[in-house]
Amino acid sequence: MSIIEQATRRLEELKRAGIEVPTWDAPAAKEEQRRPLAEPPPKVAAQPRFNAGGELRAERALRPAGTNALVHVGGQVGQRQSKSVEVDMAKLANAGYLVPGSPRSTLADEFRGIKQPVLKNARSDPAAPIRLGNLIMVTSALPGEGKTFCSLNLALSIASEVDSSVLLVDADVVRPAILERMGLAGADKDGATPKGLLDLLTDPTLDLSEVILKTNVPKLSVLPAGTPRINSTELLASNSMEELLQDISSRYADRIVIFDAPPLLATTESKVLAARMGQILMVVAEGTTGRDDIAQAFAAVQACPIVLSMLNRSVMSSDHQQYGYSEN
Image (cartoon, rainbow, N blue to C red; front, side):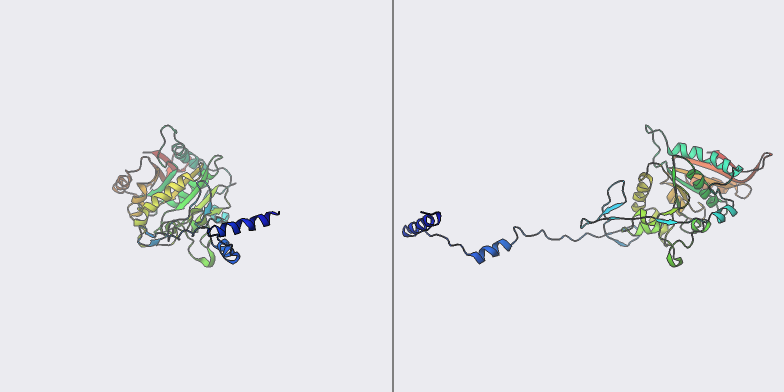
């Protein structure tokens, strides 16, 4: 007797004994197969939050530490690229800046002397590190003392180091000048203001790598000031700025960050920034800045652990040096 015949006989015996035997409904079985094993979990809407500027923000995309890859909520991975720009070398040279490849000069030697204590502090002993020691703010008491000239030349000088890369931040959000000095004023399409520092503080979808400009000067990148805001002081004092500074400081181990900041006695932005820097370089123009102004400027940056000073436009000794350096 075949297996099918045995099964048929067994079913008949069960029916005669009064036992209910379920029948196989093929269409129903197919419908059961089509039905999902479990209902998918409900979608949860992202919870919005407000930033220091009062604007509605979505949560930032998740970014693995040490990379520029972005992992989005849907699981897709994308790469955000920095924009490459061409610095106008001829314009820099004509304005007296330290253009790479230029002959050795007194100015170049003096900035070598200026950068040494800055680099030493940035690379402090790991056993007693200086917090955010690689964040250096260059400022002055009053406008017109040459702080942007010194910021850019210091960045160019450090970029020539074998073991350092430089990010030059135009933190003079009131009167930005770095892009114009470098011949990059039209770096964005249609001559629009390139996004930068202030945009990072107001738009959480922006990544640092998207707004940094990679220049044709080896190891030198620039972060523009960004779109002007009437609440720039509050933005620089926000938690978002604190998080951004941590990111800028730690993303690359060899990075030195130079902030070209506004004059201390002319605006409020520099006083806010000073409390969050690892070092401050105070530019003082000889013969133009009064003692009271200098004293007020140094008093305004007491929260910073290291304050250095640089005497600008000074004629010293018989070799007519243009710059001098002293440590406070």
